[in-house]
Length: 391
Image 1 (cartoon, rainbow, N blue to C red):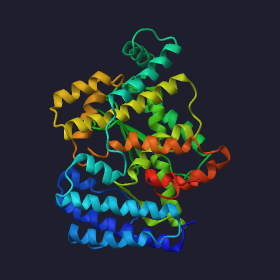
Image 2 (cartoon, rainbow, N blue to C red; image 1 turned 180 degrees about the horizontal axis):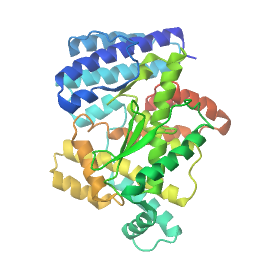
Image 3 (cartoon, helix red, strand yellow; image 1 turned 180 degrees about the vertical axis):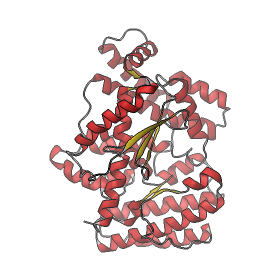
Image 4 (cartoon, rainbow, N blue to C red; image 1 turned 60 degrees about the horizontal axis):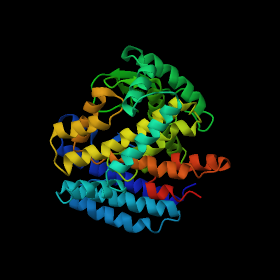
């Protein structure tokens, strides 16, 4: 249970975040204005937005809130809310033209290591994938192995919808073993072709949207179901909303804020979902997990090359193509579209760094402590650092 002091703090932060979001949206146009800073708002008008006339005003209010965060009784909330205020303050500073450097944005928005993946780390991923595929009987170098594995497991684009429906039913049932499922509330699936993302959770429409431009395997779809739906983003949003309505969760959990201190754990928790529900069944799932981790890591390097080193599109694409073992040209085009969106170019670090932060904790949680761990990570927002305070 959170203290009354913390619940009031969360309400104040939620109201201020909505005020900053409203100011930000006034500066945008077209589709960008539809996304905004708070990309999901489940408050349904229950939390009136603080009136924010300028980023300078917002930064002053955030400084006052940050000072109050240190008086909260829960250690993880003191850490989390201090970092959340710094994250929002850094976003406001960037809107004032004071934080243009990509590495600074990654560090100050997300509170994670802004270094992109190194060549040595890429080779480590590739070595593990090669070793596993060799043990499974695949011959040749890693690219030949991955091509053969991909061909064996791929799902034709016109079958993705049906496979997703099947996998979502299984994942929902397994998720019910560890989390409180929303009664009568289900997710569906739709497909798009050529979007600048692999998949996205559209909570308000209760849909997971799958990009069918990349080649997709059954294992990749299984991962996406766990990430976007059960026990991933849909369950994260659903539980936050229901726990707030019961008076036991803070109001800021009603928002999903882009480029935020909670972004990395938000993505890391979703990526760990397949392990949470004990659905890693065979070596094909293990290969898929390694490929997913590598792809998440490659996003950091491509964004760094494009925004920090100022390399031209063709050069960045060529580098990405060198290490992209599966997914085809559709995946490469999607990644390039993601990193070239300046509102998302730092956010791409949240996937790989989020995995590191969440899995490090998950792998030391005793089986008997898992129910308390799930309460801890689904019932309140976290940074990579505040998550470490479990037990």
